[in-house]
Length: 393
Image 1: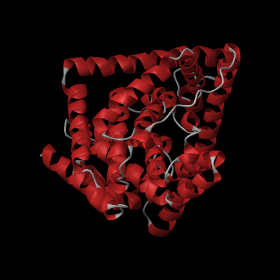
Image 2: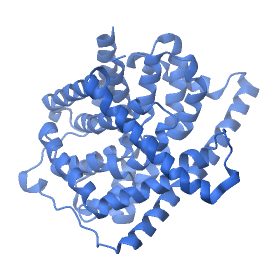
Image 3: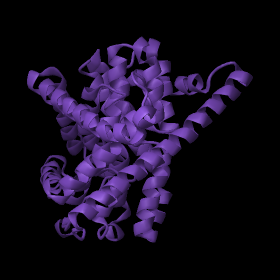
Image 4: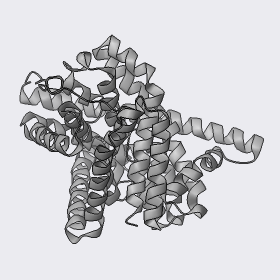
C-alpha cells in the first residue's frame, strides 16, 4: 500500500509540474529517476537501519544540547521572566537562534562550513547532473538559509539566465537553514527534521528539472564562489549575534501578525459559516494529503495544517500541528512533519524576490515574474519529501 501512495504522490507532483513546465520536451527523466532513487535509499537508510537511526538520533541530541547551551544566556538576560516548568515560544524557540547564528559564523570563519558545502555540492552535481552552481547552492541553503545564502553567489547572480535563477530560488524556498533546525526540533520530532533536510535538497532539484529543464555548456557552468572580505574575529561574532537577533525579531513579528490574522479569519468564518477557516482549507488540501499517504480519516486535519503553512509560514503551521498531533497516526505525523520543514510560503516569495532585487534590479524583476510558479515549485518539492517519508511508515 505504501508503494501505491508513493506512486500517487509522485504522479500528482509530476502531473502538476508537467502542466506548467517551461519546456516539456527537455525534461530529463533519467536524472529525475536517479534523484528519486537516492531519496528512497536515503530515507530507508535513515529510518530503517540501526546505523541510520543512530546517526539521526545523534544529530537530534546534538541540537538539543546546543539549545540547552543557548538557554544559559537566555536565563542570564531574562532571569525570572522565564516560566519555570512552562513554555514561552519567544524564549524557548526563537532566542536560541542567536547562539546558533554565532556558531554558524564561527564555522564559516574557520572555513569548515565552506569546505563541506563546496565538496558535498560537487558530489551532488555528479549525482543530479545539475550545474556546479545549482548543486553548490542547494547544499548552501541547507546550511545558511536565506537571505544570507544569496550573498555567497553575489557576483554570479547578475549573470545568471532566468532558468538558472529559477532553480536556485526554488532551492532557497525548499530548504531550511541550520540556524532553524534546533527551533524546529522543539516542535517536531528531530528525526523527521533531519530527514526533511536531506530530502528537500533533492526534491527542489527534481521539481526544477520538470518545471524548468535546461542544459548547460561546460564553460557556462564554470563558477568561482565569491570570497567575502575576512573580518576580525570578534567583529564577525558581533555581526553574527545581530544577524541572529534580526531573524528572531522578524520571525516573532510575523508570528504576531499571522496568528492574529488567522484568528480573525477564524472568528469571521465561524460567525458566518459556522465552520473554522482551517477546516475549509483542510477540505481543499485533503485530497493532496491523501495522495501523499495520509489516511483519509485524517486527511482534512492534515490538509488544514499543510494549507496553513502555505498561507502563513511553517512556524504557525507547526504550532497548530502540535495541538492536534496527539490525535493523529504515526504515519500522518511523519508525512506532515517532513512537509512542514521548508520555507515554501507566500511570505518567503517576497523575501527571495527582495533579496535578489537588492543584488540586481533586472534579476529581481525576473523573480517577480515567476514568483507564483516559484511558490508552486517549492510547495510541490515539499509534497515529494512528505510522500517519500510515507513509504517507510
